[in-house]
Image (tube, rainbow, N blue to C red; front, side, top):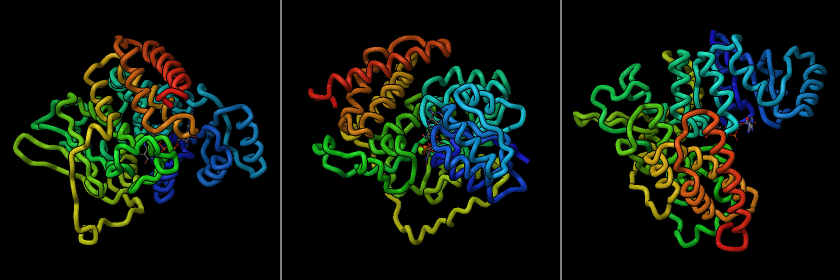
Length: 397
Ligand code: NAD
Ligand code: MG
């Protein structure tokens, strides 16, 4: 029986994880569930899965959740705030931590899980992008295990020789090829990108996901973050990681070997497949996913990504090559710009503009400690906010 802490249980990955968990009560039980502000949904999840702990973002949220749970006769204990997240991520009551908080907020509890030697099922790519080397040091030093939930990285993990992930250069791998759907604006006239609304950007053609990652998919910053994530997970340099647009999202990624073989993992675009793979690893269990019907799909197509249409992809490759604080600055500036875009305070095209200026200005320092990373994260957020504010009437924004 695996005992899970699920960080970010009310989100899209959180809900898919609980869907798989509910299918296998003999294999998985829940030690803790966490949410930022949606304590109504968290209360329902607590009543269904009976965790020992539930954690929310604020004291007020915790009081409301506590009242609701007590009224229903639930014994689940309630905590709140960043310290409580760290506590449930490192508690001996769980052996496995699903890291499904969105953005930099997930870094501290995910790092705590690594330091506690947990098996970490990683969806929160931003944590790895911010602090790749430090994070992997913690994993190695404390004997933690890292299994990727991101569909591309999970696919690559499945296509690598057993136990090779993390110990590259592994036997005969030439390249990894990350596939990308190209998002909703793959064929849109680039001259009209400035007019894109948040509603258009969050409508992904193949996947149903949280709002931030949906915008990242539209700009292809998501693929850029995934290139950096793949670098850390599989130990390959930027020039051995390719991105290939594949609009049907059936091939989730590939590994090319020196002998000319290319291994791919296929499936319907449903996150329950990689989640079930990582949850049950090394076993295979039912994920509730429709069988893949290749005859009905009939055609799989591929194309090279267009750098002019997707400047964020190049920015991420450049940040990976630059090293140091560049990736953390890129991630923080992107979070701020996407938030501003979703709130109607910035144009779609200002996301790439803001990220480029922030990385240029402060992305060229060394990042040796977690404090260095957190400092660059703070500075990048402040600079991005001021650029977006200042630019509201003048080009940016
Ligand atoms: P989401 O917005 O649907 O859910 C985010 C979760 O994080 C929620 O439970 C929310 O309560 C919690 N959260 C948000 N801010 C928080 C904070 N400040 N402190 C604590 N908790 C907070 O997002 P999602 O789509 O489920 O994505 C989660 C992560 O998984 C992201 O890093 C994303 O890149 C990654 N991911 C998602 C998908 C997908 O299909 N949705 C696929 C691959 C990777
Ligand atoms: Mg992905």
